[in-house]
Length: 471
Ligand code: SF4
Image 1 (cartoon, rainbow, N blue to C red):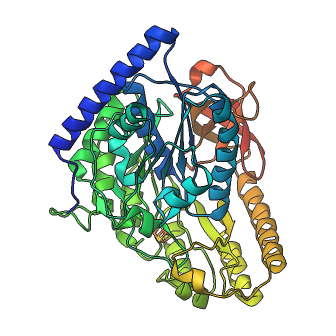
Image 2 (spheres, helix red, strand yellow; image 1 turned 30 degrees about the horizontal axis):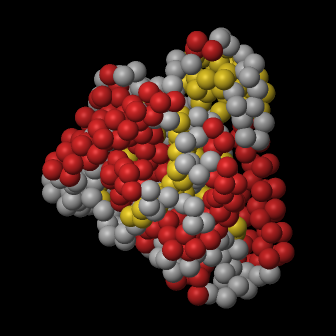
């Protein structure tokens, strides 16, 4: 059973939070404005959800938020360790912050998340960027008031990175991105140790939240107007294995489905080895569970899959997909694919393309393999050259783009229920929202429709989105 942060520890952090708030009140009296904080998030939805908690704590501590680091008194970057380019971006941002801090030495720079939790990473960062004030891991998020107070009062660099599994902290303040949709973490960590992945080393072993606590969070969200819930975990299919009273992921889905006011339920991520008949049945019987499934297959070749330690074969994966399609014919499927795993040959890669063609995913998230120090795959030598890997990656996109466009074409003429997210990021004259199947739809309409479900007739299909007309 997972450990929870004790009441006593939470009380202590509340005291630190009060002290922080007093300091920020004094700041207001002196400067006539509240201190501003700029946050940036790299990586997955779990990180997005962690940032919402960080912002929740900071809001309670009296901070306001701003969009750029140039305007900020405090900058916090929530980092990702899954791929090297996410780390490179953070180092690039630290270079920019160095210049800002030269003219404004009082700027506080904080880094948190998976990247900083890798072995010796905090030391590596501080060696190059000694102007970073605060480094803390995902396990220490609830201690942010204490850590920040130490930086402010003692004017010294504070680090809190550890590699233990970490305790679950309930009831932290949270400032959510959306008023109508919410991520709800149901578990933390991962036990799978896929050979290329750093996550189990930085986020620790699986810890499931008690179902009662998850349901209480969902009910509270509904009370505040949220209607779409996305249940989050590195491998949601493992949910509940460490709980005292039995409740697996399917059971949890049914419990969430029964909550009045919830209209849509999504979940991610599923692991193909644990994804089974019980969950498929539950998806068909729970009317609020969206007809959308993200099931990462990563590679199509069985030897590569085995070296990735994925514990399923191409055939088993395809069989599960067939079952899902049969049970839910209009299911929208998405997946993750890694191109250029060290031992992958051009011939092996053909198996990956074969899976794409057979399954016909609506969307894929594709990545070129990124070597992560400390993982078993990091010791393997490469079979293909960089240019061969890039060529395969381009072929993958070419095959998938044609499939995605064809799948989107099937929507033209249909009327879809769309939950409106707000103004489109790419065109301020359009609204943007999502269908039950998770497709992005852009259409003209009043901003006041944000957070509402509207019927939209699909008029045009693109590779990654749809255009429509409000009915
Ligand atoms: S299931 Fe595999 S890829 Fe996913 S987080 Fe766990 S180890 Fe990483």
